Image 1 (cartoon, rainbow, N blue to C red):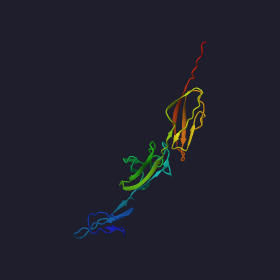
Image 2: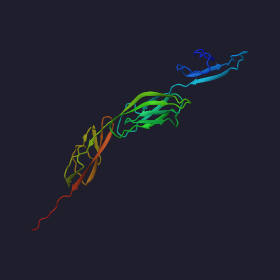
Image 3: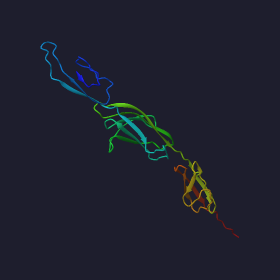
Length: 232
């Protein structure tokens, strides 16, 4: 056998395993077969190559660099194959801790995307577990990278669902909760008395310091004024 200088020569054997220490690259092996008996004829030299593919690596990122978002805000979790042959198969743990797989595709064959579950407030995590490439040897390597998304919880309470007021009576609508400001529709100012004319459903929008919003409603029912007369 004739091998590259940095590879141990296997000696006078008919087969052997390549060493595990081979790094990424292409290695050339050539062999000549010699007859054990006189006149010790030799074969032509046969050359073979062994290609060692790199172990794939990948990253996981959130589209929101701050990691803190409002409820129902669109947040994209992106998996990207860095080293290896595309397309890549990514195995990850979703926000419930369940194992999922996704394959890179589309315009950027190295990436795959999922939308984070932001419909419920709280802290959610996505963890990249492993990546497998599409080389002839389908190389795979474990990964351990996590992105965290904090979904902010904002509470807005307009008060009871329904209130009644007499015609011409002055009322005050005051919202409460975790918001820092409350804006009502129909020209109502939070905490400022006014006199409603018609039965109406009023909506209040609460906004916190982060810019997240939530709404609530209250129905105001106007009771007609009582009328009467005196007979003499």
